[in-house]
Image 1 (spheres, helix red, strand yellow):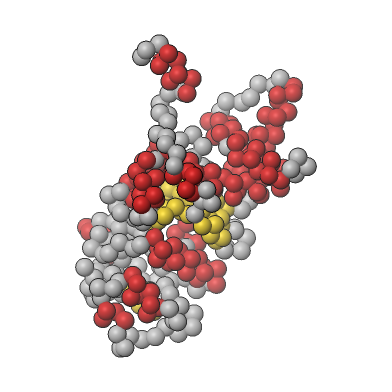
Image 2: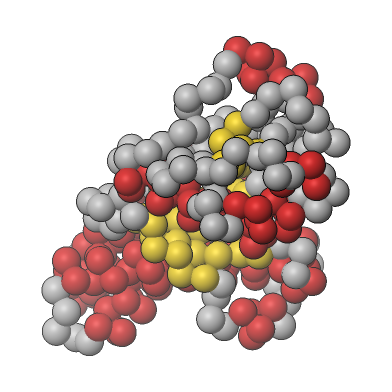
Amino acid sequence: HLGSSSQVQFRAFPAVSQALCQTWLPETPWLVSSSETPAMPGKAATETYTHGVRTQHDSHIPPERALQKLKEGNARFVSGKVTSSFDFKPEHRTALAVHGQNPMAAILGCADSRCPIETLFDVQAGDVFVLRNAGNTLSHAEGSVVGSLEYCVGPLKAKLIVVLGHTKCGAMMGATQTMLNAQKAEKTGTPAKQSALEKLLAGLGPVTEQAQWELGSGASADEIAAHVVKVNVMAGMERLLIYSEPIREKVRSGEVQLHGAVYDITTGKVEFLGQHPRLPLILGMQAGLINTDKSLEAIVESKAQGA
């Protein structure tokens, strides 16, 4: 379905650009003909979409290639050689509206304003399907997040999901302090607060406790908050696989890959953590999405009463 009406930047280094073209677009050998202009250092070779941006008229990208494009985009962002916004024109907006979206990846990230996901991966409109909340969390089996990710890898046929945390995360700092306060409250009998924010932070208690346990009892609040960023990413990946049977089955079959990553807000660099180290074990678990319309206690009580 690829045409030659317009071009966008091909994000590959010169030594591998031809190989990547052949891997990603084997049905279009003309894209790697000898007449193609080789990429110069610091620049990208060319890649062609039917309408200049990714739409439903273009091929789906395998997870390995989508991950590589994210890595290359972040490398450009770190070096200050971004390309995604240079050639975005009004007709590209029209193409996306008329021909539909075809994102190469879904990314669950933090709502922190210092973490603009499309910018730090140097992608343009139509490239990634983005979900964000405070702490990139699934601590309460958020159905809107899980359902949206199922939509992206289902009808939209994206092959990659990335759970993206970041350094100096306010939610992780707040969750750490909430955990420490709760530990003190147990000793003093002080009642816990119940605002929506307090409930969100309290829901992150298990990951902060895990981080504290891994570091040891002498760890400071700052040390725990820094370490919990990665712990939370891994927990988010695990919860997503447990909560969503469709995503779990696609990951099990190899059709979709689920990766973790952490964005350093100081350097701009994304550290890619790979797939979950306990992936085979998690894929063997069987669990459904928790009914978030009721508390767990209410569900148990209703079942006990035969409701």
